[in-house]
Amino acid sequence: MMSVSNSEVDIQARVVSIVRRTSAVAAAEITGDTDLVLDLAFDSLRIAELAAGLEEAFDRTFDLPEWVYESGGRHSLTVGSLVSFTVRTLRTNAP
Image (cartoon, rainbow, N blue to C red):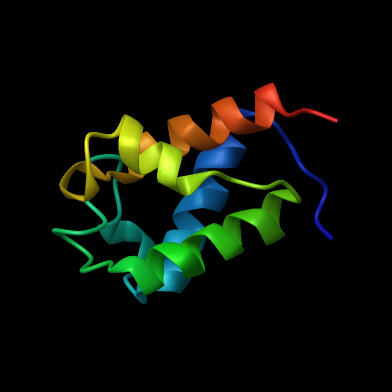
């Protein structure tokens, strides 16, 4: 298991890496404004894979339905909003 750092830069890099692995898109093409549904064609299965990747990487449970709700639905799911949600989850549920 990796050591978990709570620096926002580290969290962002790890989230982008998970998104890249889940979507098979090069990291250079993924920015905070990248929309998971519209730009990367994520569906519910990929969102589930993303949740599993986050939970494995950060050793935490992530309530992705909450993130989808907070983001205003599946057509507003950006990498940036996912990073923000991940940071909040890690800081709220710190061991």
